[in-house]
Length: 283
Image 1 (cartoon, one colour):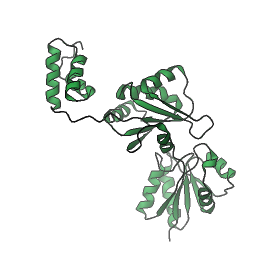
Image 2 (cartoon, rainbow, N blue to C red):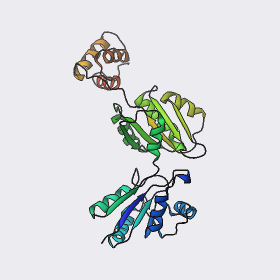
Image 3 (tube, rainbow, N blue to C red):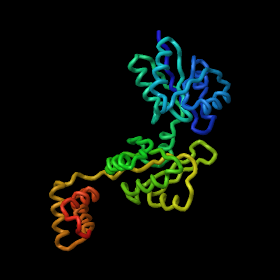
Image 4 (spheres, rainbow, N blue to C red):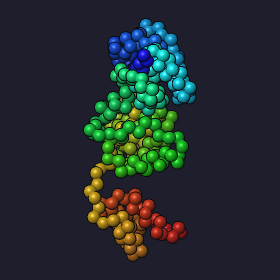
């Protein structure tokens, strides 16, 4: 009979958030799979947990995952933990859960901290519908494709970001969502210097251009306003823009006029209209 994989959520800052059930689960497991055994050793020592540790992280999850599954299939019980937060959420633990599912191994979640949900709860943003986007890609092409796909997203969006990348990320978010889009920057949640700043993308970028970001951030961004269905097609709207532009108006002004009248978003109209103009046209 196979064992069980437990997904044990760990504190994201305050050790007081670790539940008695989580501690008992670790103490009763045959072994513990940890993202960074050095970080996890501090947590385990604090709660008096003495169990064999194996390493399971982004760079070894394929080989380590196979080894863990083999041990669980033989009857051992494994507790998976991360450095902070819930395993398998924006984390290679999702691959281990998939392997267990493929091998009909029982997976049990021991709930606890999740920075994304904690930040959403205190953000002041709509919480009924949301999308978790995690960390944006460092690859510029992939990053821009992702943000472009989210331009019209009406659900609240959740992003993670490291302090040294925050300024660049805020600049990119502003480019795609506009300077007036609401954002809550949740910093160092559950820790001594916990802070939640509710502002706009424009104000946030201005602030952090003058002040150094500190600590890990969860960014909660208000979704786009729900647009009514335009009464005319995109093609018809673009034709109208070109007509206004050719009569002497600036392209941006023509786009604004048509967007206000039809309900089509300005950016898609602008990009579509550009394809019909000579490259050397002054816009």
